[in-house]
Length: 218
Image (tube, rainbow, N blue to C red; front, top):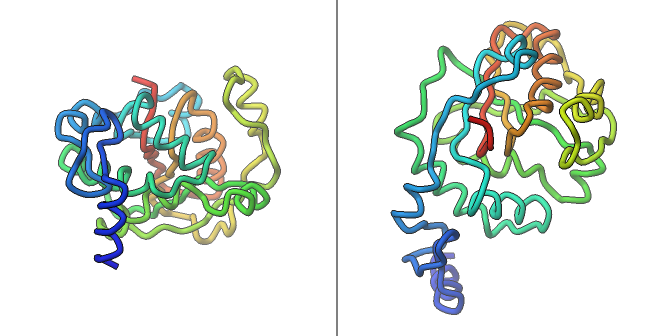
């Protein structure tokens, strides 16, 4: 496998996903671009979301290289973007807060038809390595019960209506009393987090935290 990677790197030299400068191996960023992109921040929560979620954080801002990497993975199936995202998460670790108590990671789900079409849930692929490294288990405790429109371009009210009743808990017993770490790739208005967090809280979750790869809030 190592030899195959070396051959691929020779034929297609790896480069920084932001400035396109050559780097030693696939997945690496040049130091300057990594510093510019990494921005671990606690996100300001809309009033309604704050009623259901204790706090939320993002690893970086949703623009530039991060936006391109996420979109390429989600909409064009570019799994070759994952090493860059995993490297990015590792680079942000020192600045990341410690969660109070043991948490159980729960990814925002796709509708089964959408996941079958895409072939994966990008949230799970992005965070799986990071979660394993930190000993945080991940469970599919949420279901998307119906197809929804793409959130892009919708107003806050339209987003909330679009997601109303779109999520359900797999088993309330698995949620009751737990500290939940809700995962998504991006956060814009917080409508998706709100819809999921409200369902988890109604099922008895003790505390709910949010974590996204990138956000344009704050």
